[in-house]
Length: 293
Image: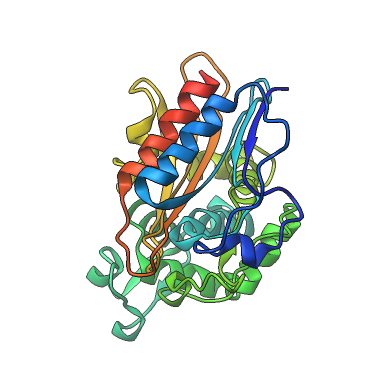
């Protein structure tokens, strides 16, 4: 199996490796023969004054692309795909017609669907959270599951002992790089996404529903979707931490006549008040697409 790897490795201290102003760990003594691709990620980090975390795997032949794949990043709204998956796992499709009532007190900024209603089904809340990144919908899903720690417990059942879920929206977006709360790694979330969409975490009907929500996401046009060839079907969930100019996207990419590629691109800028830049994620996705063909 060909692996393109750089950046932090398993076992790196999770908090210090997440600090955008700390020095990166030393590069491998013997870079793999595909080092030019690693150099592309490093060039992007230099050009955008940013830190990238990338993990992708071709599920057909097992080839990987990894750069800072085990470093911590704030997951931000990418967790909403996992929350919807956990709700599907709990209720199955037959239970998604459960009606959830809420009040104006539950509404938050960036709640474009829930703000138009006072009650929605679990299916509608999942749709709103995944496809529109609706913050109030995400919190209502977390409430149904039993809170952020309950979602973390579901991910642990899938084998993820890395991700930390502690706060609701919008607080989880306030990333403190000295803390591990509300963070994950590109590799960990790629494995979780693969489990929900392509694996056995859900039964086939529930996998199909989650896949549809991801494929019809409305927030990702300028991110991974913009970096892969136009003939690739993409299902993704975006995220935008409120500090350090973070920008995230997690996706399953379906090339024609091939097994899918699971891809995670996380990023943050080096200054706490910096703005995010969608182009960084798109350019990183281009590197992955070229590497994996």
